[in-house]
Image (cartoon, rainbow, N blue to C red):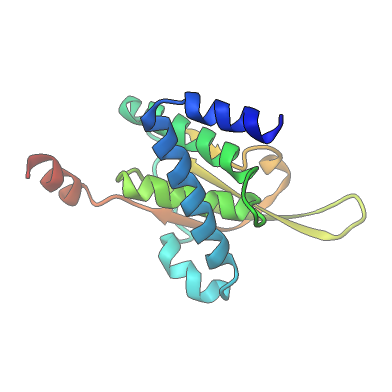
Amino acid sequence: MNLMNKLRAFLSFNWKTKRMLFESYLYLGWARYLKSIPFSKVAPSLGDQMKETTFDFHSSNKEVLSSISQTIHIMSRYTFWESQCLVKAIAAMKMLEKRQIESTLYLGTAKDETGELIAHAWLRSGPFYITGSEGMKKFTIVGKFAKEVSYEKVEGERNG
């Protein structure tokens, strides 16, 4: 698909989708920047270490979760920087956090066919995997970060 076709496709989207794609691009850039910082400095911003959020299903979140997953996957192909699993997971986590939706970021390791250690990251919200679900089963979880929502804050925003 050449540049003009890509531009036409983008222009055909409604404003809500365009905003979500643009937001995804910005968060992917921010997440890539965070990846360049020592992980020990970034980890506290990812949530409660070695904890998980609930697997409960909230049907009101399903459309938002799907939109975030899709726009992160689409925009990660168009960044000028590396936007692989960890970058995608952090970007999606930040987008969910902005919408007061909890999530858990998982970090895993495994050995590839040659015996080399490889790593992978993925993000889950409720029972849905937002990023990185491909191949996650072959990785051993070595870290997880729960980004929980303060329900008092959410109720205050809804009522205020």
